[in-house]
Image (tube, rainbow, N blue to C red):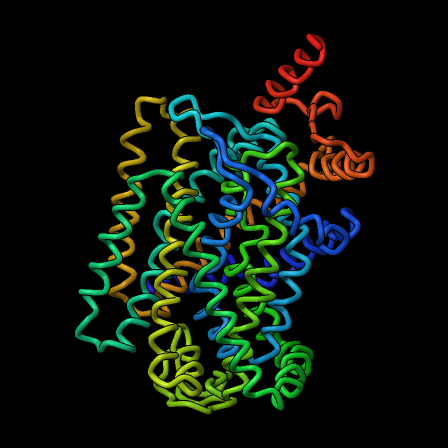
Amino acid sequence: MEGIVSALNGIIWSPALIYLCLGAGLFYSIMTRFVQVRMFGEMIRLLFKGKSSSDGISSFQALAVSLAGRVGMGNIAGVAAAIGFGGPGAVFWMWVVAFLGASTAYVESTLGQVYKERDAITGEYRGGPAYYFERALGQKWYGILFAIASIVACGIFLPGVQANGVVNAGMQVMGADMQYIILGVILVVLGLIIFGGIKRIATFTEFAVPFMAIGYILLAIIIMVMNIGQVPEVFGMIIGDAFTAQAGFGAAIGWGVKRGVYSNEAGQGTGPHAASAAEVDHPAQQGLVQAFSVYVDTLLVCSATAFMILSTGMYNIQGTLEEGEFLVQNVDAATEISSPAFTQMAMEAVYGSFGDTFIAVAIFFFAFTTILAYYYIAEVNITYLTSRVFGRGAHKGGIFAIKIIIMLMVAYGGLNSAGYIWGLGDVGVGLMAWLNIIGILIIFFAGAKPALAMLKDYEDQRKAGVANYTFDPAKFGIKNAPYWEERARHHNQGNLHR
């Protein structure tokens, strides 16, 4: 099985996907006139503006749910793996893919908002790549293909990575004999929350994600201050190594982009699911909020991890040498690279046993909330399939089945080796990224360019100083946007009555 997973990774994560991620980000950055820079202030303002409703969650809750998916093992063990296999230069390429990917995140999340619909069973808003591929392209088969890929990725391949990290971090603190107890706690708490639906998930992540992210970044800043003399050297290592022969042969670029996309998920197609559930006045608003979440994930949390590891020297770099040999070796050769170990050792070097324990707790919350986000994505895509393919009668059974499957995969991931489980996760991320990036590029060249039209419309209304933003899809020739069409009708009828 491990050989099959490794072979699949070699195909999926070929240089073609790496340059597709970077190329799509650059393309959309140019097309949006670098919206991720121009609209940065507006992103911050929108975070705290929206409110939830009986059908949708607030912009901040949607950000928290999507950050729950973005901020996870990729930020702690993923950064360690990028450095361990690609060298310090991999961090630079994580920054690049985050900066460019913020524009991709804007596009995919705006599309999610434009083509969302109200669930006939729950009344909640549903949307994501499967919905916008069907509605924008008129290709239901492509929507079905993405829905299946995302259920396999988020329901089967990815939850185990998060559980594996939690169990490994817990064992680092409490000992190997605590493996089953740690896993049992994860499963009990997970079951209590996922059986409560999106509202309970949003409420939990709204509290847990900001609390742990801020605490984590503060401790990292203290480490940077204590090692302030090394900060220029760390920057030099990251920038200098990004363009060395090692980077040229693909190690730094490949690992930086792979772990960058795994961590911030820009272009992967996961963010639009939470973005679609938000209650907003204009589709572009949630696109901007989601673009900001990429910055939080990579430029803040991932950078914090990288600086901790590099400034304390708690890392090895695996080269193309014989097994057991390293390009750089600062710690025990037996240290698992695809695990939180480097980060835990960096924290322990400064804070002693408290640092080790804090990382274990942070990983628990980061990874746990990510599993919740994966469940929500799988649920949305099961809802899509049951409404389009299997019929509404299969909805309850499908939702129950995915809850059980995710809990089984969490158990499986917690008991297997880190390398194998990360390989499965990479297959899931790669499958979704291929389908989503190609799909949103086809939407762009197919005609209406909805994400760009939304950005211009939002900026025009902003310049005009409107009190309440509105959006009418008919004005832009956008069809098959049921939620916004209904909302525009009600708005127009209200104006007629006045």
